[in-house]
Image 1: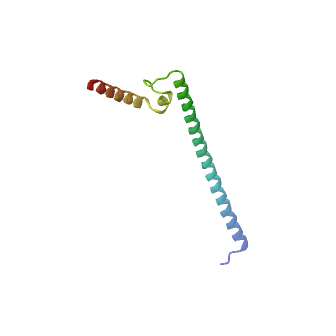
Image 2: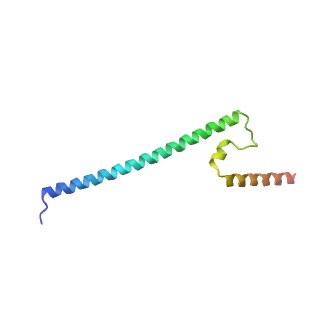
Image 3: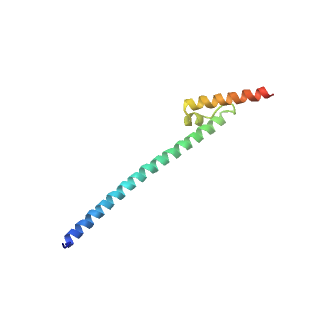
Length: 95
């Protein structure tokens, strides 16, 4: 069975169309990923500025900066505070 030039051209055209679609999907996924990365970077910068402002306004070493509350869940915060209290109580008992 002979493959005519028209069939070769059609196959090549279908192949090129498929490759083009794959490339478009890949580029779209890359753009979505890049946007997510940019959003995370912007959020981290925002947290950094919030912490700097908190320190300038007198935030001390006995409190947690605002970024701590944005990056931890309530359960984690309660657990960390409980562990910190226990540690301080143990240190106080040793004196």
